[in-house]
Length: 471
Ligand code: G6P
Image (cartoon, rainbow, N blue to C red; front, top):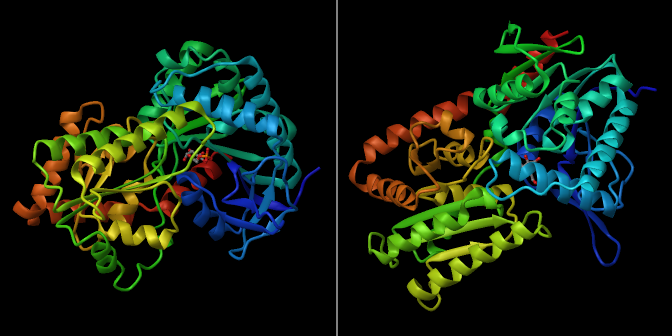
């Protein structure tokens, strides 16, 4: 059975979450994360179909078209699926494993069974909505078995897979009890994309170690040189496609919004900003500790410096996330208790999700942006900040372990595992803005050119053209 959609994206989440008010009224709001931010404009351009979960258990409204012309096809997850597939295997087994064991992954056989089961259902939904010969683009670590299942159900489809998070070294990956099954699942795709060449290499090395697969050569496409491996007689291309943003989707900043915000903050000389999902991979606590030590040593003056931290709620029932949140909030309270004054906190902290245009004002108002993850596939927040500083203002402190560091070399790079390194990068950025403004401006403009030129449409075009050329 096939549907009539020629371009289908399947991701764990739909781009919108369903909310039901106590009176039963239903509303949709944008869902969190970089994947949704990057893919939404692509789907709108292609007027495609998006298969995904609406963000709440036991709900699957009828498919509908958004105002922007994207057909949303909700998939129902039960509460048991949510616990075993989403909170369990996806976010307590795979997420920490793929982020280099920042916390210890937990492996449970029941979670694996739920993961398999939910991947099968996603694949079945896609098989029903995709037209004969359609292109299907499978997204991220939650759905790694979908390409393999889909190839069996619908051999006519062209299947791409893109991983939005890092891929760890085989030495770490080999601990996963179901590593062979995941590799076989991915190998159902015609093209597997990673952010970085180093991620692709880790994956290929793993295939060599566990499955004895060797790279047969490269397939030059018009866009990239992909590596080619053959699995069960099926040729698979593997390559690096660094994701980016749609600078237009940040909207217009509110007229006078920056001045208003800075006035609300007490017109400090220096505004520092952090924007993250509240996730232990993001290094939020470490950046607060670095900031605290800079205040303690009087390298930064609490009377003229403000740190704004926006932490979007995420995966809130998982213990490691709860722990990360309480550590962050304890540090915020301690810093404000020590260095703030009544009505004048040094750290302004929000545990909320903000609309894009408000975020744009925050980005524009910030003299220094802190992006200090321990590990991150790309980090689109860093690119969004740069996109909002086309006038060359501002400075970016960026972790060496964010994928974005490969492109944004002119940032103030730091090692988030080393507090002294974070402190140095913050101070160099703050001081550089007043002592060497021309140098700082040139650096920001160089990064801005990179982000403006290689935007999300270039990313999608590179991937989809390469996928088409595997036909
Ligand atoms: C990251 C992942 C996405 C995920 C997002 C939000 O960006 O790569 O796949 O959707 O985080 O996380 P959540 O668990 O809320 O979907």
